[in-house]
Image 1 (cartoon, protein in one colour):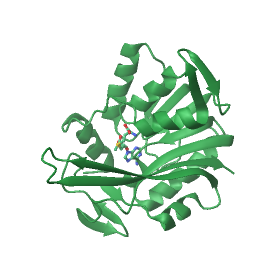
Image 2 (tube, helix red, strand yellow):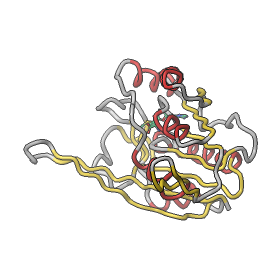
Image 3 (cartoon, rainbow, N blue to C red):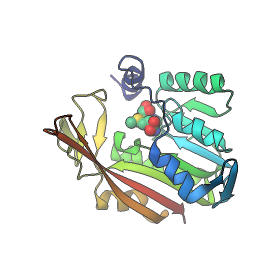
Image 4 (tube, rainbow, N blue to C red):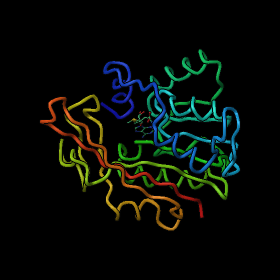
Length: 232
Ligand SMILES: C[S@@+](CC[C@H](N)C(=O)[O-])C[C@H]1O[C@@H](n2cnc3c(N)ncnc32)[C@H](O)[C@@H]1O
């Protein structure tokens, strides 16, 4: 099964539809783009007008960004996710340009089109060569100055090593609803390679989340890098 069919089936047959924007994307907006001062009052921290959500899934982040007042675009390999997202946004009366496309191929937007790009939990599901092409395209479609917020699974994650090894720090997942998907775990060296010479890091956090079963006998933790970088 190709990547496109796989992600379609994750959304349609396995029910991965996500109805809340990633908290990290909400925090990125509050910290770096537009700070809420009061109900209906904001302070712009960065002069952004147009934003792209890369790997937008069914549009939860796009809906949030559009509601925050940005001209919003989203792209995802899964047509099924994009179809769900378009209907959801239409039902909410919100306008955003969601379309299907592979982020490891040339992006269908002109140079310097966006003031910011967000990308939550996507580039760790793409082989490293594809992730490098995606980052180079993000650099092209970003204006200067432009901000790029991305999160990446970290090599410290407890799930590291699960599944079938298909490359350095890269596995094909075998359980859970993302079974069949590629999972790359980024270490510091990978992050440097990914951003090399193209972006300046403004903020980097390693976010560790622990989840317990109700008896506290089992714990599961994930490590994720949260990076806010600026086009140089
Ligand atoms: C873990 S989900 C995250 C979805 C969304 N960013 C969110 O946080 O709600 C990973 C997403 O990456 C998309 N994806 C995987 N490979 C992709 C590719 N090569 N090009 C575009 N999207 C891709 C999947 O379809 C899926 O929607």
